[in-house]
Image (cartoon, rainbow, N blue to C red; front, side, top):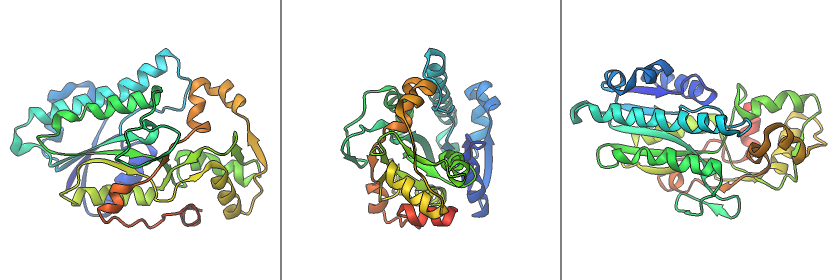
Length: 285
């Protein structure tokens, strides 16, 4: 298939691009300049694609001052809006069959357990970004198949949060964050790529899908599993106040977390290769 991807230079985008290429697909990388030139130019790029995957968005782990909040929001809203405009500019015969748009499990409240049928959304900044981000795709609901993937913590050795943690843990400087009781809803990068491919080929798939493993854990259990896998002690604790000094309100990305399950993927018949944290870390490390 011919698949157009925005955000292909990030950790997730690079891994997904490599996976889809190895599966025999043809890829079109949508760059930042393509968005700058507007939806008319972008329409020419995407009109031959069977699938569009939108992963574009600036990092949320930074101080949430007014400027950074605007960047976080606009980097998601404007790119998604421009892509939707580009799709609609093409006639129905030239439109892709599927639009996969990224979102995040930060949309859910930090209390309780959530699947795709949960409406217990958080009221904070990150949740508001996710809601607005997903809302930009609704114009396509009656025109093409749309999947909104709410992504958890993606684990892989070459980047993401685990890539940053590994050197510290290997040096014996790892440890839990705050109380360690916050939920840690993760997915192995290979399972993420496989799940995206599954949605591409399953013509009945549409709507929201949680991209997390079926066995969410807590930060302290993740710390213990990573320490055991590396055979290194993890006796330290990163205090919440220290993270707040560095990141301000954005520290909640590390000190809080939603407990999320992938009910719709499981119902659709998708089988995880790494459903639990021990198998995921053993494969990665």
